[in-house]
Length: 300
Length: 228
Image 1 (cartoon, rainbow over the protein chains, first blue to last red):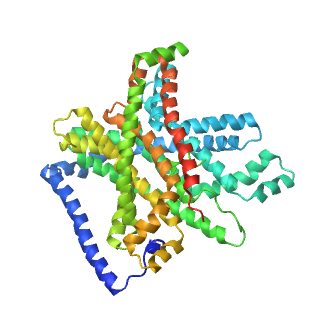
Image 2 (image 1 turned 45 degrees about the vertical axis):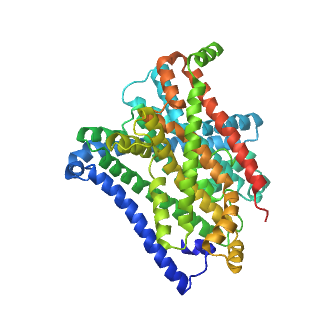
Image 3 (image 1 turned 90 degrees about the horizontal axis):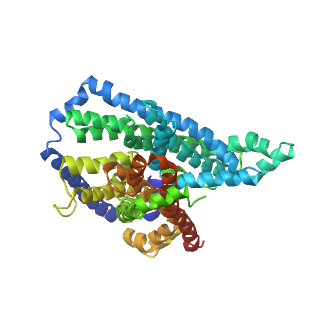
């Protein structure tokens, strides 16, 4: 952290160090004071009593509420990831197709589903399954969540693939064509494998987005972590402690995924600096592409 | 189909729902920009305590689902703890709206901070070195030299945050704020026969809201880009 942000200030001298120490002390006091205020507010409202927190020490809380909820979240995320990867790669290839109609169709599809909120697609898919195909029972909300997440995320992954292919040196495509591969075979055998590798960190970051967005399944009654936590909270009357525990579970999982993405990014950069691949600078800076949730319309 | 569309548009006040969406987005965007700028400054400050506090905020908030944050505000602070924003006697839907805005602002502030930090990182080192060389201190070099360039460099990522925010306003439907997706749920439940028309109307609304935003920000970032 210190190396990259030292842009703004010199290594502090003795006077600056003293001043920083004073500011640091005052600042920490202010931050601690703010946290203490929150904690005190929660405490005076009785949120730290043993009765509110003891349910988390009982195995039944975990075995019948939190762990099944976490499982449901992970199941929805897992299927969405697999399907999004498949459709995303297909859509990405479609956008790079030689055929103008295919290109246009995939382009419209991707732009449309990136502009529509995930929650709306989830609601739509849920009600189409309910009224149109007349699915019922436990599978219904799960299918709704998976469909909503897949529509959105396959569009995002399609854009990542397209950006990845765009960032490859032109020689790659030309070499493929020169040895007699068709344009499609060049894309499939030469460009795509490299594009997916380059975009791997962003794709892993997109996992975090999928995991977070699966919580939207709450509205279509999918028993994911937030909904099962709410059931637990209404039973035990400890809404705030339950939400804190659930947030902690999400933060831990997503933090680990983010670290994985950073690790992959560093490894790829190390490889890029090696002598074999001299120039493969991604057009999309990893930082921008990594903001999966934020990959809006502007950067296409 | 066309008959269904006109029937729906005359029966339901779609524009009013999108007006709520726009109000949510504008209020939350202002809040997120304020909080996000403070967090971004903390993350580049020379004082280590502020840096870690800023990093902690971004890490915690970014990895929590927005749904959970909005619930925390509405069900936790408002319903359970009985905290109210603004007038004590304002009705429930006004309070839900305000808590929804707060939740959206807190969540997107983390992304605004990241966007600004990437903007600050895009400012060449020489600019800050020059600022220090002519004797400006941290505050002066930040406000007069680095931040103006950083904001320009951050326009594209900030635009992406704004677009994501507009779409994410739908999440406050889960706490009963009557915005576009809340209306959509109600419409489909009353008129399941017109489900496709309903989806097309509301989805088009969002395309109309976000697509020009994307074009606007692309143009802005091109026009305001710092020439180097």
